[in-house]
Image 1 (cartoon, rainbow, N blue to C red):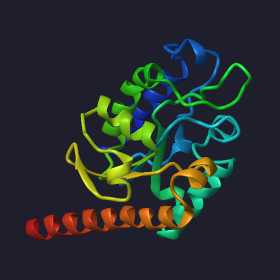
Image 2: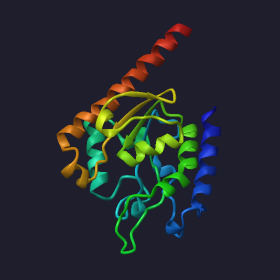
Image 3: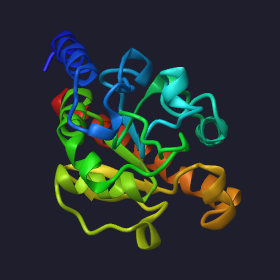
Image 4: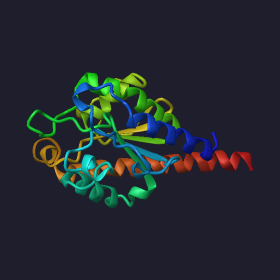
Length: 212
């Protein structure tokens, strides 16, 4: 599909997401989906959990403006990637909050309600490498195509999924860093993303050489 057509489809999806009212608890909030998410046609697509109240929900840019975003930027830079090279979205496009206004995980129903948007983003962006950030994002992919991957077994590994390379990673939040995956381990995990991109580059180079 031509890139111009994909951009048109993405713009239509952005407009549709902005008017979505499927989740009663999130009505009145705006989906974090726009050109700020990244490049249509990016080779790597990162999927997080949901926009943070002080992060993406405030800045309108996924994984920016809070400590999770700063950690994410540092991990990307550690393997030579810049935000301009990737596309990043979330399993739930709106910010889920408790009654007191604190962040909470999106419910299974809320993630399910957003699964159509996730599926269409994958089709439109057409990445070669998909990277999930946390268990919620990894589980959300099952609504697109079922898998049995878990963070405990597959974090930092390159797996095949839906004809793509999938790299499950832990979420870069301070809470996860403190309790589940320390900084050194996360930095090591991100090297798998760089390896996956190199594998894609080699594969496409070989395909080109066979044609010419």
